[in-house]
Image (cartoon, rainbow, N blue to C red; front, side, top):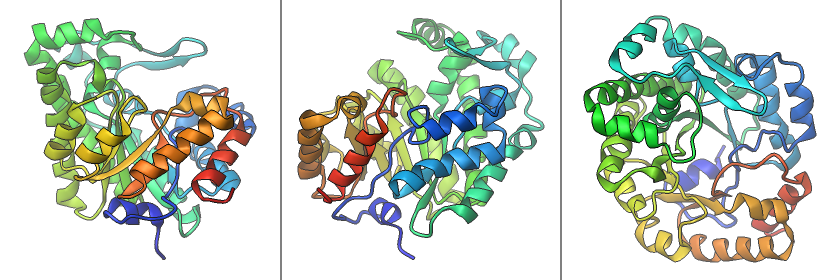
Length: 343
């Protein structure tokens, strides 16, 4: 059974292009909120296969997307490493900050990593059996840089000044942290494939805050090593990188990491992406998620423009970042119809 999403990642140009959306299982869906209410907290939600399978399948039932992505969170990796991770309503993730090598060694728990993540692997195994035959199954993780920002600062940030300063001033500690994350992230993704994932996406949501030299050191080099390790074990499984905000560094990213596809954020000019990125790999994106909220003629014009410019090469339609909670579900249905040429 051919799966359009996987065909596109092999370099095929499809019309209409395959379609899925980041955070397609999420708070914009009433059925998600009803399922989420059954869990005592967000981490418990991620580690509950019954609930995680259900919310992964919900958007497929509504919209028939060409890919499903494992429902989990990038911070299960530091949680499995022994760092204290909590999600508090209205405040986002809260972690016990790790700011030097002594603190890192104090919490580091390399034994039991995969045992801790068994519920995630069980979710993947069950999804592989339950998704429709033409739907591809995506596994994912956060990239080392982005996960490290949370581990060092203990929460989200506006400018990531503290972690950037530590990366400059204490490169030995920071390299040790990144090396651990490369090793554990690669093994985590490989195990997801062992349990049924057919493609992988690595989210580097905060890649755009780095200088050129730091981008190479903390984004490109770790991602290249992760891809190398995945391909050694699973050479035919495609890997998508998403270095959000990378700008002109997108081209170097795809040339030097070995990814099969790349997610484009909404700030990237379409013609530039076509001429400098799509000639190397399959591109994925990049509708502004707030256009999906507003809908109407503005959204329809931009969908058409994206399809016209990127649809002539290997392309997967997606957003430039994840769906936001106040997105009307009917706008998602309209988007699907537009991409599929049904209206």
